[in-house]
Image (cartoon, rainbow, N blue to C red; front, top):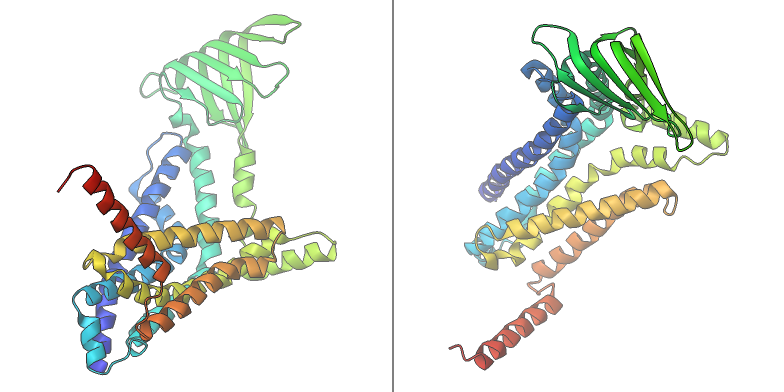
Length: 389
Protein backbone atom coordinates (compact mmCIF):
# COMPACT_ATOMS: atom_id res chain seq x y z
CA UNK A 1 0.00 0.00 0.00
CA UNK A 2 2.87 2.37 0.69
CA UNK A 3 4.19 1.76 -2.82
CA UNK A 4 0.75 2.42 -4.28
CA UNK A 5 0.35 5.60 -2.23
CA UNK A 6 3.73 6.89 -3.39
CA UNK A 7 2.84 6.08 -6.99
CA UNK A 8 -0.47 7.97 -6.90
CA UNK A 9 1.06 10.87 -4.97
CA UNK A 10 3.97 11.22 -7.41
CA UNK A 11 1.59 11.17 -10.38
CA UNK A 12 -0.49 13.93 -8.81
CA UNK A 13 2.59 15.94 -7.80
CA UNK A 14 3.81 16.06 -11.41
CA UNK A 15 0.50 17.29 -12.76
CA UNK A 16 0.06 19.67 -9.81
CA UNK A 17 3.41 21.30 -10.54
CA UNK A 18 2.65 21.63 -14.26
CA UNK A 19 -0.87 23.00 -13.60
CA UNK A 20 0.42 25.49 -11.04
CA UNK A 21 3.09 26.68 -13.48
CA UNK A 22 0.55 27.18 -16.29
CA UNK A 23 -2.00 28.97 -14.10
CA UNK A 24 0.64 31.22 -12.53
CA UNK A 25 2.06 32.05 -15.97
CA UNK A 26 -1.36 33.12 -17.22
CA UNK A 27 -1.99 35.32 -14.18
CA UNK A 28 1.51 36.83 -14.30
CA UNK A 29 1.21 37.68 -18.00
CA UNK A 30 -2.09 39.44 -17.31
CA UNK A 31 -0.46 41.37 -14.45
CA UNK A 32 2.50 42.34 -16.65
CA UNK A 33 0.03 43.86 -19.10
CA UNK A 34 -1.55 45.79 -16.21
CA UNK A 35 1.88 47.00 -15.05
CA UNK A 36 2.70 48.12 -18.59
CA UNK A 37 -0.48 50.19 -18.75
CA UNK A 38 0.07 51.67 -15.29
CA UNK A 39 3.65 52.66 -16.13
CA UNK A 40 2.23 54.92 -18.85
CA UNK A 41 4.17 53.43 -21.71
CA UNK A 42 7.64 53.79 -20.18
CA UNK A 43 9.95 50.83 -19.73
CA UNK A 44 9.98 48.96 -16.43
CA UNK A 45 13.33 47.50 -15.43
CA UNK A 46 13.73 43.77 -14.87
CA UNK A 47 14.42 44.37 -11.18
CA UNK A 48 11.28 46.46 -10.72
CA UNK A 49 9.14 44.00 -12.66
CA UNK A 50 10.52 41.07 -10.66
CA UNK A 51 9.74 42.83 -7.39
CA UNK A 52 6.17 43.56 -8.47
CA UNK A 53 5.63 39.95 -9.52
CA UNK A 54 6.96 38.71 -6.17
CA UNK A 55 4.66 41.11 -4.30
CA UNK A 56 1.57 39.90 -6.16
CA UNK A 57 2.52 36.19 -6.10
CA UNK A 58 0.70 35.38 -2.81
CA UNK A 59 -2.60 36.52 -4.33
CA UNK A 60 -1.96 34.40 -7.42
CA UNK A 61 -0.97 31.34 -5.38
CA UNK A 62 -4.08 31.52 -3.20
CA UNK A 63 -6.14 31.27 -6.39
CA UNK A 64 -3.97 28.81 -8.32
CA UNK A 65 -3.18 26.19 -5.66
CA UNK A 66 -6.80 24.94 -5.14
CA UNK A 67 -7.36 24.79 -8.91
CA UNK A 68 -4.07 22.93 -9.39
CA UNK A 69 -5.11 20.41 -6.73
CA UNK A 70 -8.35 19.82 -8.65
CA UNK A 71 -6.53 19.32 -11.97
CA UNK A 72 -3.90 17.07 -10.36
CA UNK A 73 -6.39 14.59 -8.90
CA UNK A 74 -8.75 14.76 -11.89
CA UNK A 75 -6.16 14.21 -14.62
CA UNK A 76 -4.25 11.59 -12.60
CA UNK A 77 -7.30 9.42 -11.98
CA UNK A 78 -8.52 9.97 -15.53
CA UNK A 79 -5.22 8.64 -16.83
CA UNK A 80 -5.16 5.70 -14.44
CA UNK A 81 -8.74 4.85 -15.30
CA UNK A 82 -8.01 5.00 -19.04
CA UNK A 83 -5.07 2.61 -18.51
CA UNK A 84 -7.33 0.28 -16.45
CA UNK A 85 -5.15 0.81 -13.39
CA UNK A 86 -8.20 1.68 -11.27
CA UNK A 87 -9.80 -1.65 -12.29
CA UNK A 88 -6.58 -3.46 -11.41
CA UNK A 89 -6.58 -1.86 -7.96
CA UNK A 90 -10.15 -2.94 -7.33
CA UNK A 91 -9.38 -6.47 -8.53
CA UNK A 92 -6.52 -6.55 -6.01
CA UNK A 93 -8.92 -5.68 -3.21
CA UNK A 94 -8.04 -1.98 -2.95
CA UNK A 95 -11.20 0.09 -2.63
CA UNK A 96 -11.64 3.41 -4.37
CA UNK A 97 -11.93 5.19 -1.02
CA UNK A 98 -8.54 3.77 0.01
CA UNK A 99 -6.91 5.22 -3.11
CA UNK A 100 -8.05 8.67 -1.98
CA UNK A 101 -5.49 8.75 0.85
CA UNK A 102 -2.74 10.32 -1.35
CA UNK A 103 -5.34 12.76 -2.69
CA UNK A 104 -6.26 13.78 0.83
CA UNK A 105 -2.58 14.13 1.75
CA UNK A 106 -1.88 16.47 -1.18
CA UNK A 107 -5.05 18.44 -0.46
CA UNK A 108 -4.10 18.92 3.20
CA UNK A 109 -0.61 20.10 2.25
CA UNK A 110 -2.11 22.59 -0.21
CA UNK A 111 -4.62 23.71 2.43
CA UNK A 112 -1.95 24.42 5.04
CA UNK A 113 0.31 26.30 2.63
CA UNK A 114 -2.58 28.32 1.17
CA UNK A 115 -3.86 29.21 4.64
CA UNK A 116 -0.39 30.48 5.59
CA UNK A 117 -0.27 32.60 2.44
CA UNK A 118 -3.80 33.98 2.89
CA UNK A 119 -3.38 34.92 6.54
CA UNK A 120 0.28 36.00 6.66
CA UNK A 121 1.50 37.25 3.27
CA UNK A 122 -1.50 38.12 1.12
CA UNK A 123 -2.22 41.56 2.58
CA UNK A 124 1.47 42.47 2.74
CA UNK A 125 1.99 41.61 -0.90
CA UNK A 126 -1.09 43.59 -1.96
CA UNK A 127 0.07 46.65 -0.04
CA UNK A 128 3.63 46.55 -1.42
CA UNK A 129 2.39 46.00 -4.97
CA UNK A 130 -0.06 48.92 -4.91
CA UNK A 131 2.38 51.31 -3.22
CA UNK A 132 5.19 50.48 -5.66
CA UNK A 133 2.90 50.89 -8.66
CA UNK A 134 1.91 54.34 -7.40
CA UNK A 135 5.53 55.45 -7.01
CA UNK A 136 6.49 54.13 -10.44
CA UNK A 137 3.64 56.06 -12.02
CA UNK A 138 4.62 59.36 -10.42
CA UNK A 139 8.31 58.94 -11.29
CA UNK A 140 7.70 58.07 -14.92
CA UNK A 141 5.27 60.72 -16.02
CA UNK A 142 8.01 62.93 -17.43
CA UNK A 143 9.27 60.12 -19.66
CA UNK A 144 5.85 58.74 -20.55
CA UNK A 145 4.86 61.77 -22.64
CA UNK A 146 6.03 60.62 -26.05
CA UNK A 147 5.92 62.26 -29.44
CA UNK A 148 2.62 62.21 -31.34
CA UNK A 149 0.86 60.11 -28.71
CA UNK A 150 -2.40 61.02 -27.00
CA UNK A 151 -1.51 60.78 -23.32
CA UNK A 152 -4.71 60.20 -21.30
CA UNK A 153 -3.43 58.93 -17.95
CA UNK A 154 -4.38 62.11 -16.08
CA UNK A 155 -8.05 62.29 -15.02
CA UNK A 156 -10.15 64.28 -17.51
CA UNK A 157 -7.03 65.48 -19.36
CA UNK A 158 -5.51 64.53 -22.72
CA UNK A 159 -2.05 65.78 -23.75
CA UNK A 160 -0.54 65.64 -27.22
CA UNK A 161 3.09 66.53 -27.94
CA UNK A 162 4.09 67.02 -31.57
CA UNK A 163 7.84 66.95 -30.99
CA UNK A 164 10.09 66.04 -28.07
CA UNK A 165 13.82 66.32 -28.87
CA UNK A 166 15.93 63.46 -27.53
CA UNK A 167 17.84 64.27 -24.36
CA UNK A 168 15.83 67.42 -23.65
CA UNK A 169 13.00 68.16 -21.26
CA UNK A 170 11.39 70.64 -23.66
CA UNK A 171 8.26 69.62 -25.56
CA UNK A 172 7.30 71.47 -28.75
CA UNK A 173 3.83 72.24 -30.06
CA UNK A 174 1.78 71.00 -27.12
CA UNK A 175 -1.99 70.50 -27.30
CA UNK A 176 -4.07 69.85 -24.16
CA UNK A 177 -7.73 69.06 -23.60
CA UNK A 178 -8.83 69.84 -20.04
CA UNK A 179 -12.25 68.43 -19.18
CA UNK A 180 -12.05 68.81 -15.41
CA UNK A 181 -14.83 71.41 -15.61
CA UNK A 182 -17.65 69.58 -17.32
CA UNK A 183 -19.66 72.76 -17.92
CA UNK A 184 -16.75 74.65 -19.48
CA UNK A 185 -13.99 72.41 -20.93
CA UNK A 186 -10.76 74.00 -22.16
CA UNK A 187 -8.45 73.46 -25.10
CA UNK A 188 -4.89 74.73 -24.57
CA UNK A 189 -2.13 75.14 -27.14
CA UNK A 190 1.50 76.09 -26.61
CA UNK A 191 4.62 76.45 -28.73
CA UNK A 192 6.70 74.78 -26.01
CA UNK A 193 6.32 73.23 -22.60
CA UNK A 194 8.21 71.45 -19.85
CA UNK A 195 7.09 69.07 -17.13
CA UNK A 196 8.14 68.91 -13.50
CA UNK A 197 6.99 67.44 -10.19
CA UNK A 198 6.56 70.28 -7.69
CA UNK A 199 5.37 68.05 -4.83
CA UNK A 200 4.43 64.49 -4.14
CA UNK A 201 0.89 65.10 -5.39
CA UNK A 202 1.18 67.72 -8.13
CA UNK A 203 2.58 67.83 -11.65
CA UNK A 204 3.39 71.27 -13.09
CA UNK A 205 3.25 71.79 -16.82
CA UNK A 206 4.98 75.06 -17.77
CA UNK A 207 3.74 76.34 -21.13
CA UNK A 208 4.97 79.26 -23.25
CA UNK A 209 3.44 81.26 -26.11
CA UNK A 210 0.03 79.75 -26.55
CA UNK A 211 -3.73 80.16 -26.28
CA UNK A 212 -6.52 78.92 -24.03
CA UNK A 213 -9.89 78.25 -25.67
CA UNK A 214 -12.87 77.79 -23.36
CA UNK A 215 -16.61 78.16 -23.49
CA UNK A 216 -20.03 76.58 -23.26
CA UNK A 217 -23.17 76.68 -25.34
CA UNK A 218 -23.75 80.36 -24.45
CA UNK A 219 -20.27 81.90 -24.49
CA UNK A 220 -16.79 81.48 -25.95
CA UNK A 221 -13.46 83.13 -25.21
CA UNK A 222 -9.81 82.97 -26.18
CA UNK A 223 -6.90 83.94 -23.92
CA UNK A 224 -3.42 84.53 -25.34
CA UNK A 225 -0.50 84.06 -22.96
CA UNK A 226 3.27 84.26 -22.96
CA UNK A 227 3.72 81.97 -19.96
CA UNK A 228 1.25 79.69 -18.22
CA UNK A 229 1.56 77.03 -15.52
CA UNK A 230 -0.93 74.19 -15.39
CA UNK A 231 -1.19 72.07 -12.25
CA UNK A 232 -2.41 68.48 -12.39
CA UNK A 233 -3.08 66.47 -9.23
CA UNK A 234 -1.87 62.87 -9.25
CA UNK A 235 -2.30 62.51 -5.50
CA UNK A 236 -5.70 60.86 -5.77
CA UNK A 237 -4.21 57.72 -7.29
CA UNK A 238 -1.25 57.75 -4.90
CA UNK A 239 -3.40 58.26 -1.81
CA UNK A 240 -5.75 55.50 -2.92
CA UNK A 241 -2.84 53.11 -3.25
CA UNK A 242 -1.13 54.01 0.02
CA UNK A 243 -4.28 54.25 2.10
CA UNK A 244 -4.91 50.65 3.13
CA UNK A 245 -8.04 49.14 1.70
CA UNK A 246 -9.61 45.83 2.61
CA UNK A 247 -7.15 43.83 0.52
CA UNK A 248 -4.13 45.57 2.09
CA UNK A 249 -5.24 45.10 5.70
CA UNK A 250 -4.33 42.20 7.95
CA UNK A 251 -7.10 40.00 9.30
CA UNK A 252 -6.92 41.69 12.72
CA UNK A 253 -7.15 45.14 11.12
CA UNK A 254 -10.21 44.12 9.10
CA UNK A 255 -11.83 42.67 12.21
CA UNK A 256 -11.21 45.94 14.06
CA UNK A 257 -12.78 47.88 11.20
CA UNK A 258 -15.80 45.55 11.23
CA UNK A 259 -16.26 46.05 14.98
CA UNK A 260 -15.95 49.82 14.54
CA UNK A 261 -18.60 49.91 11.82
CA UNK A 262 -20.92 47.70 13.85
CA UNK A 263 -20.51 50.02 16.85
CA UNK A 264 -21.67 52.88 14.63
CA UNK A 265 -24.66 50.81 13.45
CA UNK A 266 -23.20 50.73 9.95
CA UNK A 267 -23.09 47.68 7.65
CA UNK A 268 -19.70 46.10 7.00
CA UNK A 269 -20.57 43.55 4.35
CA UNK A 270 -17.53 44.21 2.18
CA UNK A 271 -15.07 44.01 5.06
CA UNK A 272 -16.64 40.82 6.40
CA UNK A 273 -16.55 39.17 2.97
CA UNK A 274 -12.85 39.98 2.61
CA UNK A 275 -12.14 38.64 6.10
CA UNK A 276 -14.04 35.37 5.68
CA UNK A 277 -12.63 34.92 2.19
CA UNK A 278 -9.12 34.53 3.60
CA UNK A 279 -10.27 31.62 5.77
CA UNK A 280 -12.50 29.91 3.20
CA UNK A 281 -10.26 30.09 0.11
CA UNK A 282 -7.79 27.53 1.57
CA UNK A 283 -10.72 25.16 2.25
CA UNK A 284 -11.21 24.97 -1.52
CA UNK A 285 -8.04 22.83 -1.66
CA UNK A 286 -9.84 20.09 0.28
CA UNK A 287 -13.14 20.28 -1.59
CA UNK A 288 -11.68 20.56 -5.10
CA UNK A 289 -8.87 18.07 -4.50
CA UNK A 290 -11.29 15.33 -3.40
CA UNK A 291 -13.74 16.23 -6.17
CA UNK A 292 -11.19 15.62 -8.92
CA UNK A 293 -10.63 11.91 -8.23
CA UNK A 294 -14.18 10.57 -8.83
CA UNK A 295 -14.62 12.95 -11.75
CA UNK A 296 -11.43 11.62 -13.30
CA UNK A 297 -12.67 8.03 -13.05
CA UNK A 298 -15.87 9.01 -14.87
CA UNK A 299 -14.33 10.99 -17.75
CA UNK A 300 -11.66 8.43 -18.71
CA UNK A 301 -13.52 7.70 -21.96
CA UNK A 302 -11.89 10.83 -23.39
CA UNK A 303 -8.47 9.15 -23.19
CA UNK A 304 -5.54 9.58 -20.85
CA UNK A 305 -5.94 13.35 -20.88
CA UNK A 306 -9.72 13.39 -21.04
CA UNK A 307 -9.87 15.08 -17.65
CA UNK A 308 -8.49 18.37 -18.95
CA UNK A 309 -11.81 19.45 -20.47
CA UNK A 310 -13.75 18.52 -17.35
CA UNK A 311 -11.12 20.26 -15.22
CA UNK A 312 -11.51 23.50 -17.16
CA UNK A 313 -15.28 23.22 -16.84
CA UNK A 314 -15.08 22.75 -13.07
CA UNK A 315 -12.68 25.71 -12.78
CA UNK A 316 -15.22 27.89 -14.59
CA UNK A 317 -18.08 26.60 -12.42
CA UNK A 318 -16.11 27.21 -9.23
CA UNK A 319 -15.13 30.72 -10.38
CA UNK A 320 -18.73 31.63 -11.25
CA UNK A 321 -19.94 30.31 -7.88
CA UNK A 322 -17.30 32.32 -6.06
CA UNK A 323 -18.07 35.55 -7.92
CA UNK A 324 -21.86 35.21 -7.51
CA UNK A 325 -21.63 34.36 -3.81
CA UNK A 326 -19.12 37.15 -3.14
CA UNK A 327 -21.40 39.64 -4.89
CA UNK A 328 -24.39 38.48 -2.83
CA UNK A 329 -22.33 38.77 0.34
CA UNK A 330 -21.09 42.29 -0.42
CA UNK A 331 -24.64 43.42 -1.20
CA UNK A 332 -25.95 41.99 2.07
CA UNK A 333 -28.33 39.57 0.34
CA UNK A 334 -26.48 36.64 1.90
CA UNK A 335 -24.60 36.44 5.19
CA UNK A 336 -20.91 37.10 4.37
CA UNK A 337 -19.71 33.92 6.10
CA UNK A 338 -22.29 31.75 4.33
CA UNK A 339 -21.55 33.49 1.03
CA UNK A 340 -17.87 32.63 1.24
CA UNK A 341 -18.53 29.07 2.43
CA UNK A 342 -21.18 28.33 -0.20
CA UNK A 343 -18.82 27.42 -3.11
CA UNK A 344 -16.88 25.02 -0.86
CA UNK A 345 -20.11 23.53 0.51
CA UNK A 346 -21.45 22.90 -2.98
CA UNK A 347 -18.18 21.41 -4.24
CA UNK A 348 -17.78 19.39 -1.03
CA UNK A 349 -21.26 17.86 -1.28
CA UNK A 350 -20.65 17.08 -4.95
CA UNK A 351 -17.35 15.40 -4.07
CA UNK A 352 -18.97 13.30 -1.32
CA UNK A 353 -21.80 12.28 -3.65
CA UNK A 354 -19.46 11.24 -6.46
CA UNK A 355 -17.11 9.37 -4.13
CA UNK A 356 -20.07 7.44 -2.71
CA UNK A 357 -21.37 6.52 -6.15
CA UNK A 358 -18.01 5.63 -7.65
CA UNK A 359 -16.98 3.52 -4.64
CA UNK A 360 -20.16 1.46 -5.18
CA UNK A 361 -19.47 1.35 -8.93
CA UNK A 362 -22.73 3.10 -9.70
CA UNK A 363 -22.92 5.63 -12.55
CA UNK A 364 -23.39 8.99 -10.84
CA UNK A 365 -24.94 10.79 -13.80
CA UNK A 366 -27.57 8.46 -15.28
CA UNK A 367 -29.39 11.44 -16.74
CA UNK A 368 -26.30 12.53 -18.66
CA UNK A 369 -25.76 9.00 -19.93
CA UNK A 370 -29.40 8.92 -21.11
CA UNK A 371 -28.86 12.22 -22.92
CA UNK A 372 -25.76 10.81 -24.59
CA UNK A 373 -27.75 7.80 -25.87
CA UNK A 374 -30.48 10.09 -27.17
CA UNK A 375 -27.89 12.20 -28.96
CA UNK A 376 -26.43 9.14 -30.64
CA UNK A 377 -29.85 7.92 -31.76
CA UNK A 378 -30.81 11.32 -33.16
CA UNK A 379 -27.49 11.55 -35.00
CA UNK A 380 -28.04 8.04 -36.48
CA UNK A 381 -31.53 8.94 -37.72
CA UNK A 382 -30.20 12.15 -39.27
CA UNK A 383 -27.41 10.37 -41.12
CA UNK A 384 -29.81 7.72 -42.49
CA UNK A 385 -32.23 10.36 -43.78
CA UNK A 386 -29.42 12.28 -45.44
CA UNK A 387 -28.44 9.11 -47.34
CA UNK A 388 -25.02 8.79 -45.74
CA UNK A 389 -23.74 5.25 -45.08
